[in-house]
Image (cartoon, rainbow, N blue to C red):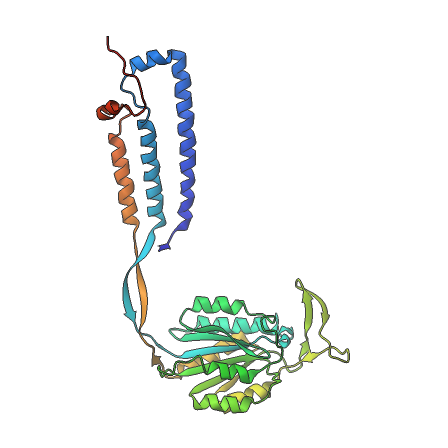
Length: 348
């Protein structure tokens, strides 16, 4: 069930207010009646007055208000399933989360810039499926292939340089893992985006990239950072305490290595894009994807949610209608049951 307008639930706060007003009214009535006459005389003057009916009327009104509020919230339930076919490309983003991606030679830092680039690419996609891989010293599947771009953005924002304990930049492992993301039964066109500063410490990238090309995977590499480079800040609670140093005590300067990324793209029939300008990257990516032939995905089923407010609205109106016929005088057959052990008064 989906609740469309949850803000209207605040109107339910009227229920305790009405209950308090009712209790105050009962207290005031009894106090005023005692000033007028004693209880025996009041019972004689109002022989058919019910003590239960006012409470029943209150319950009916509160239920009516609750039903009306739920109608305003407009609950929706899946009423049918329909098959939808999509055409597009299977895209996997392999994002470098090694410590070198914390360098701030490109604002705000390399990793955040990578997230911005992928977010903008996602915003320009149509019906393509996407997946996300994080890698450093090893590769880690972050999001399986999906058409849920909202989920992709959520997982994207969760990426950080502490999520993979083994440090380094194993681009080859990321490419190898990406080959498992694509469904061999669906012969879709496949694209792998590698977003990195190109500092690979594992080697064997060319062979893996060539293997990926043989499986029909087009690799687009995006270089993030500058060739001048910058230090890697060591932070605590967002405050820079120091910069990463090597074994000799010298500050480590990490640099963009475009040659590595260019070589990978060349081996996999892809392209290399410089990632410093978000607008330029998104334009080039869009042009590349437009030139790739779209393939039809397997049929997907989506629930068609329909509003159910009319049922609660009808219930609320029915309760209000019933309230009209609920008089405060007691009902004859209820009096005979004597539910409250009231003694019958003798008529004069």
